[in-house]
Length: 201
Image (cartoon, rainbow, N blue to C red; front, side):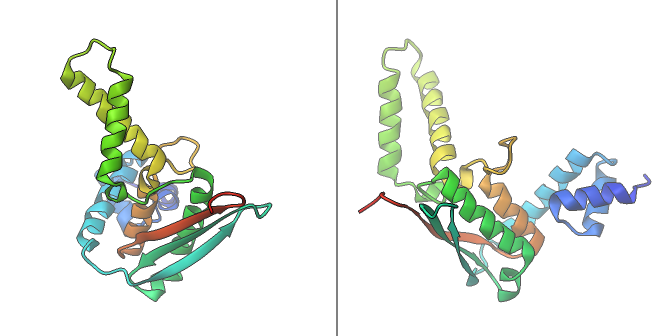
């Protein structure tokens, strides 16, 4: 099928993918923009998965101070090379992450960082909340796991919906994966600290 330059440009703007990749995605999906975005994400994520074993030993530490100077964030994001650390895409990701952390106040970076004892305690609380409900155990278990997913979405940085996306569909994980696919490097959020005046010891 014949593709217009406008279609390719629009897909590039949305995904940051190269011209040839955008053309390939649009050809494969008969010009369906949404399907092409999904096609590129899958392709990028497949490539990103291959990069998981590579060491991210470069990167940056970024500081964000919210207007009024009552709230600040320090975040370290790692990548494989100094070259990628200086790219606009990486720098924008780091700025977005710091601003998001200031707004959303996550407690952990990934699901794996949540202590098993805390997860068990959460499960107990959810079960206690439903002890008077007359539902089969397997249904209760599903409800508990659903509530746990909500907990991850609220407390875990990579699972949180990105605050700058009003649709709520883009998770922080998607944001990182997008830059991962764009730069073709393994990118990792290493650590962060959030400071608010009057909080903590």
